[in-house]
Image (cartoon, rainbow, N blue to C red):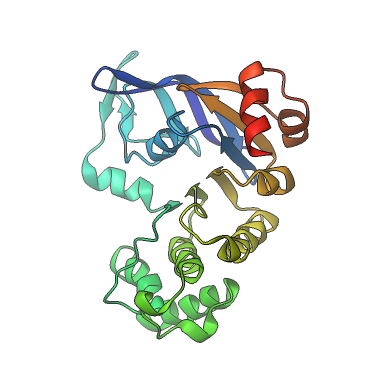
Length: 253
């Protein structure tokens, strides 16, 4: 039942140790929210899950398969070729802080581009699927709109629909509401709540404490490249054990 398993994952940029031996597990159908101050390693860990960043130590697997590497002998790993890594990424959807939509494509075109080009899906079928996804995120009337004519919240919902179009087994969200005006946050969080109800496995880097309390199965507080504590949201948010967690929450709650 394990979807994501991180074992002693380390990552450094030059002399800066960003991840210092992270151990985490996310089961299928679960939602994990990563909390912590800026620079604690949350986003870096998320990018390691789909090999946008190469880990420098430990092991990281998704659905039982090592990410970015293969066993090359006793205790040794070899990095996969780019096309093999691209195959793994097809099953992992990622939504960034910035929406990264193609500005010259409509909302619908942004959604159907990857399934047609990468998975080789039939265009007519994919367009129907794209319209269904737009309806799912409440934007069925924006199919022909270009990103410049959409609000930030609408663009982020299109970005979520685009990720879902690849039928991922895992969704990664890197502070998906941090670039939005406060009044636009709710619509994006509502879409994410719907995904959670539907059983999508999700790892969410967020400062939305209310969302973590409501939706997450596991809340994880990170600081300085390590997991300080993790557990049920009610335990971490209401009864944190570690002084660093208590200090952080006192400033954001």
